Amino acid sequence: MPTLRIATWNINSVRLRRPLLAELVKALEPDVLCLQETKCPDELFPLDDLRAFGFPHIAHKGMKGYNGVAVLSRLPFAVREEEPDWCGKGDCRHLGVELDAPGGPVELHDFYVPAGGDTPDREANPKFAHKLDFVAEATAWSRARGAKPRSVLVGDLNIAPLEQDVWSHRQMLGVVSHTPVEVEALTGWQQAGDWHDALRHFVPAEQKLYTWWSYRARDWEASDRGRRLDHVWVSPDLAGALTRHAVLKPARGWPQASDHVPVMVELAL
Image 1 (cartoon, rainbow, N blue to C red):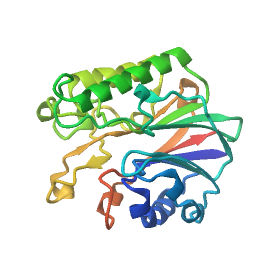
Image 2: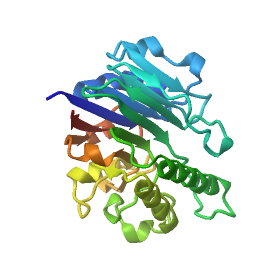
Image 3: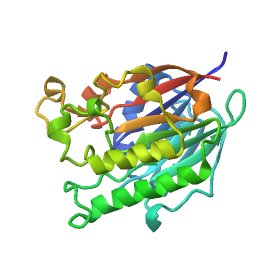
Image 4: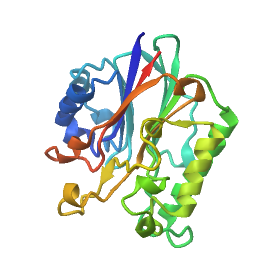
């Protein structure tokens, strides 16, 4: 049976870290790679360099210095041009494509949700308000679409929803990314589209699971104060097609590493 491997990674600057993509491709062999925080305007996007990693089909949406998303694929795809301009900001946080996949098209969405700043207060912190507004719009979007078949949503959603998605549930309750209002918002988004959590499909909710470790830690590996900020969701009809997953933790120790690590799921289609 043919398989489809989809990986996602907040690369934290595609031009700075493009040499690391060789290690990612070697380790995960993805058919499709979704990137976030590319930090690259479209006219400077390194298309030829990335095609050399075996991805002839590339779409990107970027801006100078901030945000940015890209989809790199071995499979042909069509870009979905009708997606919303989230919060009316035009800030390059979502790219939707329709993959020419085995068994029929697969709709794939690559998201980069706002981080939300440091203060979990809508009134005192406009960045936090933007984050909540973004997730609210995405929730309404998912609800209006319903559970579309053969759909996948990936990306840096910047919220760790479960207690075991953070190193200390008690200590993180007041920290942006794990506050109750954010967890409720993300859970609502997931439920609105009837999305299935592909990583927790493989890793039970009572087990720790992280995809991000702060640059501020003197020794990120020893302290292991991680969070699961990167997600893969699939439509209900694809839940039974999930065959394996990978969280590439060694990538956090690569030279000039991103603070996020790549995540991959494999589907039998």
